[in-house]
Image (tube, rainbow, N blue to C red; front, side):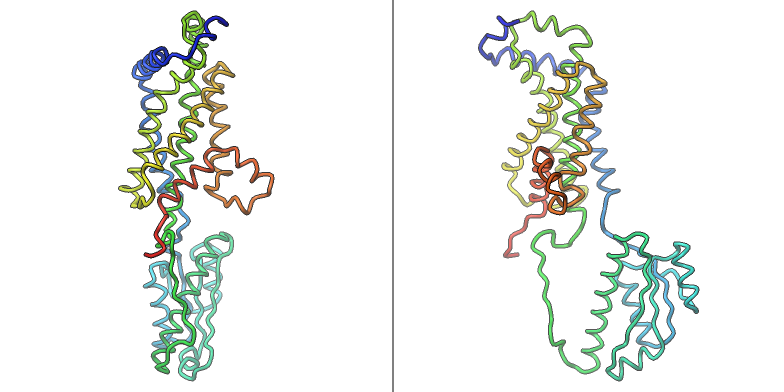
Length: 350
């Protein structure tokens, strides 16, 4: 074997190994299905299921004032599209019971003399009862309610005194203008899914040769180690690039996520990312020499790190320093940033 590995690298032998691996992939329908169908299925399922947007928040209303102004405020909540009016109540105990049973997430309580206070120019407070069991939903619902209340106050000020508000804030969002969570989640999913699938595919390659007893036959040929590794890597690199292109098309045409970056730069970054992840799978395959063990190890080495330590779900800046340092060794961390940059990038002049 030392005589074989001392030979100089030969591209012809590497391509012969690549052809052999491609023929093996073609004969195995399960590998083809895993390579092409699974990424698209996972992207669609996760893209639909994972969202941080909150809509149709169940709302109950307790209106003690029964005035045109109080009805206008309730209409502002309903017409915003964020709240779904569940029922109108007569007593505060009913609102508490609705929230305790989970029938409503938020209760809007409008006190008596609400309209009279508005007409007199006095503060007219309203009460919001929020279900804090789901802290994220409660925070978002409170933000929506505060924004609706401020907008309603501005309209009252303009209609009652015919004066412009003393201070106005004009907001311009430079990146992800609609603040849609899809533009954040779906591009990041490409990095997470391709990290798992790519390592899983190549984790079977060399381990398969060991289990079938063909590794000794390969060792008897003039093929060197580097030629064997790169030859087995090439077909899966081509498949993974096709998967990334399919995933990108799904993002743009299925989820309506715009692509605003450089396609050439994205393709180059994808090539580097996939090369690293595929190499990790081959390393595990050659080290463990068992297909089942290699697949399990590849999932363990890619799934949780790509999901939790890549910045996909949680901000890296808020993590402990030790975890931030560990995340620097995770390829998905950099590819998540690249995919989101290509989807959310926008010119400041827009």
